[in-house]
Image (cartoon, rainbow, N blue to C red):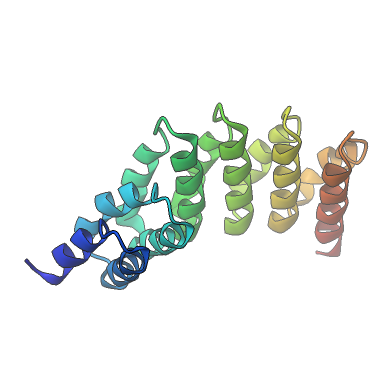
Length: 185
């Protein structure tokens, strides 16, 4: 066995610290053979393992995009949400799959995809995020508003202004903050 295979095997170790170390090492090595096992490890029960796996996959860059896009179709919303976060580490190549994730059946995935688009900051997300401001879920609306504030595109001003009348205080606050960020630029 070589070093990559050893670390892949360690992703299944009972000790979560060993799994974290294996994920970190695989992220540093960035060998494409580790992508599929790392994607499976996104479902790990231990949060620190999932965080290490997300970072490792983010270090893989473009080779990880296609397998992660496929993982966005997983039956488990937790996996789809984790993948949406992980795609943020990859950046601009992940924008289109994240835009598609904005229409996921689970509100938690939609919220995470919105949040991640804000982290990436690509203006391609403005129109779909603006449409998401009408989502039935207040957390989704809040995350979409926050993402639009991070992107800072003036095209979102009108929609964010309408959101200031939202029934949720948190959504109104997010809209106000987003407008403040956009107006400063």
